Length: 115
Image (cartoon, rainbow, N blue to C red):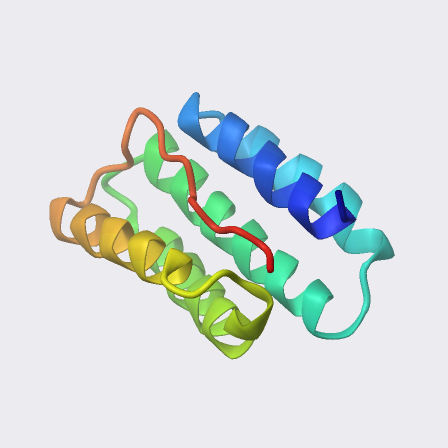
């Protein structure tokens, strides 16, 4: 299993438990050794996890959280060739619902799968 697959699987497990900060921290460990587009992809998911963490901490302060979600999705979109087709669309759909509600979920498996 590649490091990218390990990182995505670990992020899923932590996200599903609502441990977005921990997902962010563990993804950073993989990010440090990554390069190029893989590094950008991981940074995007780190930003999504951080945005969800911020939203969970204080749902009244959506500006910073939504900023991170948006920047993270931009990076993920740029690097979607590393992902199994369709997996990014699932995350985008979940984040639209989260934005509309203004509330972080109790848990969210990101659902991204590396090719």
